Image (tube, rainbow, N blue to C red):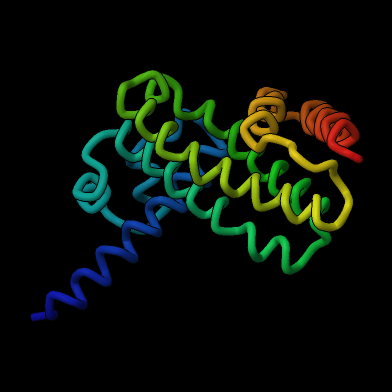
Length: 183
């Protein structure tokens, strides 16, 4: 019989696999079924339901998990790219995530969704603040830009359609905003 630590490790691995499979499936189709997500993750439906008893629970956890990973990516982006490029890449990734959120449908209107969005807000604005501070230190943006203002301004990025034209429009909007941030 496996020990408790091995069981917990397997359960955590299954959970991560399910979340990634759900993210990918929802990116392809907002109507992806829980059974198709379980199959994609290589787990049984029972395993999926043990971790996520409802579709809403799964969708909200996909959102939370993705936002945590995005916030955690800031140091690596800043290490690998000049600050302004890191800011661009981060917001482009956030915009892609926002377009996928249309797959959350009604789940985004529940009290649990509002709690998830509210919980993500402080880490997201802290990540943007860190990116802006690096850009400011490099002389690429003017001092004193409020990260909350930047997130609200750039929320337009994830409202563009998920088409080549929409992605191009998001790129243009991002560049317009960055032009306004310059010293």
